[in-house]
Amino acid sequence: MNEGLALLVDPLFRVPLLTGLAASLALAPIGVLLMLRDEWLAALGLAHLAAAGALGGLALGAPGLAGAGFGALGGGLVKGALGRRGNGVYGFMILIGWALLLLIAANSAVGEGLGQALIDGQLYFARWPELIAALVLALALLWSLPRLAWPLLRARLLPRLDRANGRAAWRTHLGMDLVAALGMAVGTATLGLMGAFALVFVPAWVAFRVARGWRATWVVAGLIGVAGYLGAFVLALALDQPFGPVLVAVLVLLAWGASALQAGWRLLTGWR
Amino acid sequence: MSESLLRLDGLVAGHRAPVVGPLSFALGRGEVLGLWGGNGSGKSTLLNAIARAARVFAGTIRRAPGLRLSYQEQRPVRLEPMPMTGADLLRAAGLDPRRAPAPLGALLGQRLDRLSGGQYQLLCVWCALGAEVDLVLLDEPTNNLDPGAERSLRALLETARADRAVLLVSHERAFLDAVSTRVLALDAGGWS
Image 1: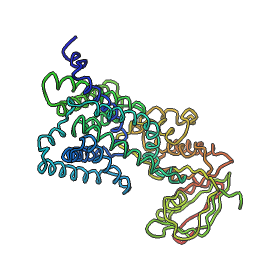
Image 2: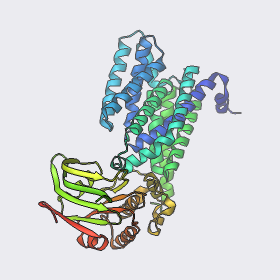
Image 3: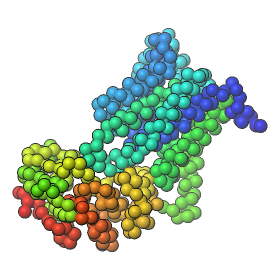
Image 4: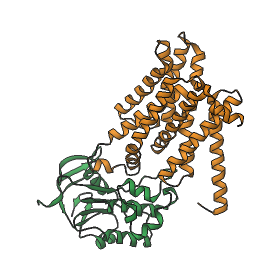
């Protein structure tokens, strides 16, 4: 067994491995839904609020995971209550979350080091609470995906159909906002701010370009998300590098590889 | 008019300000009502009002209890990129792709962003016409269609069943005369 596989089954890293695996399985589909609504920037906005919430929680003596949930879900609920969609509101979330994160870090005992750790990712320090949170997220997504995927597609492609028939679509949109907020809270607390954002953004970005069909889009995004996560997990440990930047690098390389393969396939087959 | 699916009485509708009306008409099952008029005459606004997407300034819109609507919008949503296929679009509209008519068969497996404007338009029209509804709203369905695709559209319209009504907006009078059972002409001053 080579060193990479040995790291994957090392009991010391079993809980972090499973935590990140559950989170990555959930974050890639969330990215597909956000990409569908042209709201992929939501992930970055919610991640900043989650990071600020986590650090605020730690500063007050509460678990970081609870603080992350408070920050991201609070942002998602406020956005849902205001009925605002679109990247403008997420721009403000990024700015507010970033400012809060740095201000809390500069003015509390938890310090700037922990703030930076939230940005880089603390996956290897994940324990049972983080694993349980990631599993809850994955199960919540498994339950909600069939209820959200087709109604959200209908709302996007045929935007007046629900209203014309007197159907209230706000539950679907609010449900999506809450799932995205929960995902970013768990993702940020485990994989780090940029790592969680990358797992939402990159697999969906690739899938929207190379997949043929709505179901294939989910499969491609899920495969890229899991492959990128597992590759980064092994590489970061083997090379003794911080997990978050390695994850981003692996996902960007996968995106580049998928784009190159698609371009080559088009060249060979003449496929438009 | 107890059998009317839709009845408009003195309707004045618009968005920020009134655009169309006052208008009065009723629509029953089996009818294909064509609304003809030039640019800015308020045809699309009228459909929007019926679909609860425009403001009613005066008058009333009475819909039959439990009325089910389908709505083909004048400018269909096109995203870049769109990995969904034609079959996915039909599924999203609640249709079974296997029951799509022959002219659409070749489009079902293709990504939506690979379709021409006319091909996508035909799919959107079928999303409205193929649905199990009482009232079909079609807004400029001939947009982007070449003569061959327009013949396909006429064939799709003929699949309209006798137990539902179609309200069809177009600026092409000849097309409306060919497919409608009745035509209303809208202009800035009212209707005839």
